[in-house]
Image (spheres, rainbow, N blue to C red):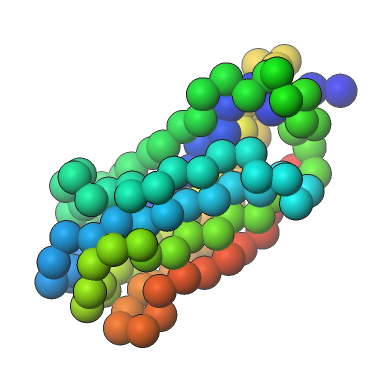
Length: 123
């Protein structure tokens, strides 16, 4: 059975109207186990409309975490105020057998007091 080699979180910005720079924390879980986390993502990057941003884990082969099953993506704003961002979020998993598993996108809009979301994927 193939294991997770790398995990990638993808954010495609549809519309970004931030008043000030801000950043996301993104956590990816597989069957309840945290497999990848990115803190302060986007604070020093140029997140404009119609741009795609990716963050990828290091090699996770040593964890021997099976690639197939249920994934949960949690994203929350860790800095910035008055953030108004509409984006499509997805994940991409590279297996130890070289197969790439790609999820369907999940669209979410952060606005005013809405500062976090959680969604699930299955492969």
